[in-house]
Image 1 (tube, helix red, strand yellow):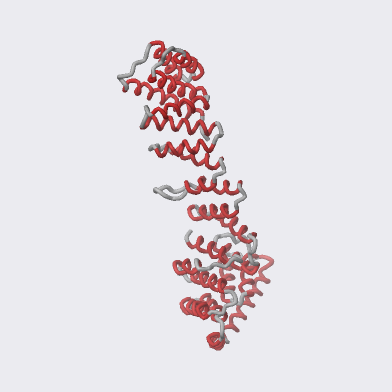
Image 2: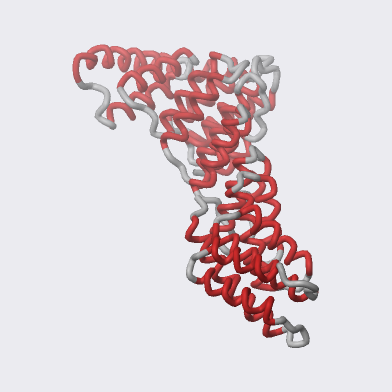
Length: 400
């Protein structure tokens, strides 16, 4: 928010600069009929009496045969008086004229450029406010408050691309959480879902919070074309980002893992639920124990036939079974052996869903603590049915 007190302070500062300018240009002279009203205006501006100051400026302007220098001083003082009076339009026109004269440079010019930017902002001419603020920084200005003016001007002009460029982490500046929220709101106003998601992902990278994950995971499932079969991966991400809220979350994910044919993973999930004190309590404890018994039985049967299953998978024309067996080994604790089999299955080819296999490999690598390898793998997932979206979220989770 641009406060009026800031505008008045700027007016007073500009008046002081005026005196310095007049003294510096010794070759120029000011007649009493011009100088005396301007001195009176200067004192009135310092006292916060902008309207009265404008009246004195008008007296100076009424003098006949003004020199170019006198006209310059009148215009400069009019800008300061108008600023103090809250007359943004007059202040802008006056300061733009002074700046165009080339007589002011350095800090004095920056203060005027700041006044122009804030004036346009208060008049709700946001594109011109942004242009003036850009000029302020180009000329060497560094006031953090002007960064806010520029950002808000872009936002209120619905220029989300400009907001995004401004918030890019360059020159050692890290966008604040509030600034990234502004970017997200900008995309929301424009119904730009892709931009909104990208902004939320940027928020997560710098300010990882559970609520941002909650929103992203809900949005990814609503994305057109997102396959229902990927629900198990959404549940995994929920668990990894602290978004499991009750026993049913653990139960549902364990059952989905069983449906995927990976009982070892289901066992890992249930163990986490019991370790967290969520499972094994209350009226559902018996049902939960039945699922544990089923998982244990299925896993035991899988291990009995594992050697033959592995031979059959090696001899198969496609790599799907190698991927599945590799996953079992990973979640049983034999990560290196399991990951090698998954990679072998992907390389073998003929997969029913190649991107699913690469997604599962990336998840398994994350589980095994091989974060860098996982990120590399997940970046190769290109499926348009939601697999690439899930992979991108896993990469984001790995980096937060």
